[in-house]
Image 1 (tube, rainbow, N blue to C red):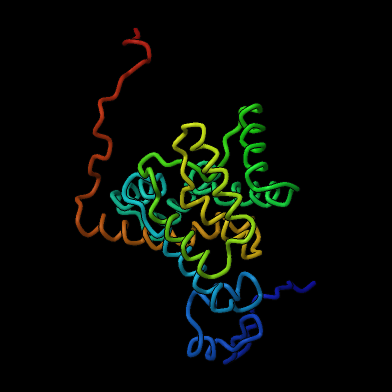
Image 2: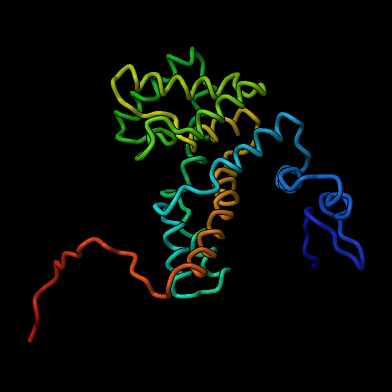
Length: 249
């Protein structure tokens, strides 16, 4: 029984990716274009390419605080190989960290397709989630009162014709929060989620967008840690409170 794939065909002196020779792609296409082809079986048009590129750039890095960066830095501190350190950082991207894009995209698609105005649907969604004790992914940020990445993605989406249905719905949710005196702005995960649904891309690729983008930052953090910091340095500076039993006999 032969293994099957529709991604690439490799023969002696020949590499075909999604039906295109690798030499032609190397010469005639950008990296984001080839990623798009590999994932979605076609090249993006000019508008899609602008948005895809902006999405990838938006999540490259966000300082020390994200768990994925912490893991990569700590592994770099003990001089683990770069693959181990960056792989460890990527492994920290889960439903809790980096998973909001996928969840938000699913919600925007499900509720955005319902009947009614975006304002009515937004109000009903928030009320439903509040009643069920659930949180709507893609809103609020522990640092930014207005996420600059979201603002730019929204501008680009509006300029390139990707703000007809799901993005207005996401913004209506933000406005509903404001009307209830809740500062929960659409964050970068929520903006990416709305845009990819507008572009007709699968919500299941939400984490993949984040991982692909963040991997660039993780490599930079690893190199900086290894080149600039001493091995086995302390990362935890806060006092530790021991809550176990005292010395036993």
